[in-house]
Figure 1: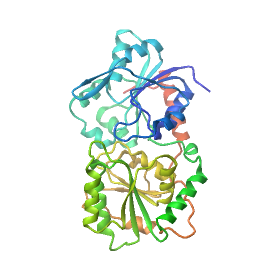
Figure 2 (figure 1 turned 30 degrees about the vertical axis):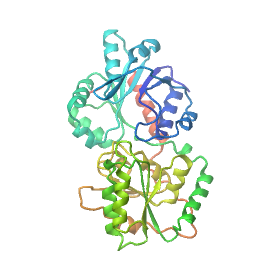
Figure 3 (figure 1 turned 120 degrees about the horizontal axis):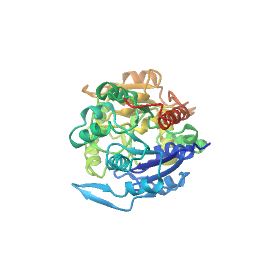
Length: 384
C-alpha cells in the first residue's frame, strides 16, 4: 500500500544491483525518480534490460554544464517546484543537495531532505577539499543520511555527531535474484564441465579491471600459494576500465611471466544470467580493493552461497561474519588463503548449488528503512 507522502529522488543512474531498492521506494510512496544519465560511466551494462525491470518510468536531465572536467546537471529547482514533494532524496553531497537546501530556504518549504551516501569508513575518513567542506556544511541542513554499513554510521556519530542515519547495504531482493534459478544452475554445471573444474577449488574476482581493485595484489598472492594448493584456480571476471585500458594486458603479462596462466584466468565480462551462473559455479569471491565504497558483488556472491574474502577497506565488509567469510587485511604482504582452503572443499562430481550465506534479507532492511522514513516525515526522528 502506498503511503500518502510525495517523494522526489535525484540520482545519477541505476545499476542492476540497485533496481530492487528504487522499485520498492516507488511502490511505497508517490514517487518521481529523476536520473542524470543512463548506465554507469566506467562499467557499462545492457541498460535496456535494466529499464525493463523498472516499475517506474524515470525522467532524465537534459541540460548540463562541464566545469573543471565535471558535469553539473541543471534543473533541480524546477523539478522541485513542479512536483512539490514532501521528501527529496539525493545522492551524496553534490549539486542536487545544494539545490534542495537552497530552494527550501528561499521558498520557505517544509519538505525533508535525505542523502544516500555509499562511502566506506575509510573514504569518509579520507574525504578532503571541497567535498569535505560541502559535506560538513550540508550535514547541518539535511534531515537524514542513508548509509551502506554500520562502521561508517559509527564514524558519523562519533566524528560528526550526526545520528539521523539508517544503514541500508547495497543488496538485492533475494526473491528476484533467484529468478530463472534452474537456468542459472544448468549454466553453472556447463561452466564446471567446460572448464574441467571437478577437483578444483574455484575462486572468483568480479569487477572492473582497474588498479584500485588491487588485482595485482590478488595475482601475486595467488601465485605465492599455488605450490601448496595446486588445486586452487582463480577466474578474474570483468571488463576493462575506461580509465585504465592497458591494465588487463599488464596483468596478463605478469601472469604469463610467472607461468600461472593455467590457474589464473581472465574469463571476460558477464552480466545477468551468465554472471549469476559463474557465481554459482564459484566457491569463494575475493575482493581485495584498496578503494571500494561498498562492493555490490559481495552480496551477489553470498546469495549464491559463496564464501567471501573482503578487503578491510570495502564497505561490504559489513556483510561478513564468522560463518560466511573473512575480512582481508590488505596491509599484509600477501593474502592468506589457508583459512578459506580449510573451509572449502574442491568441486565434486555430484555438484549442487550452495545455500545463501547472506546474514539478513532485503525485505527486513527495506521494512526498517520505510519505518525510518515514516519517522522522518512525521518529525519523530530529528537530526543530532
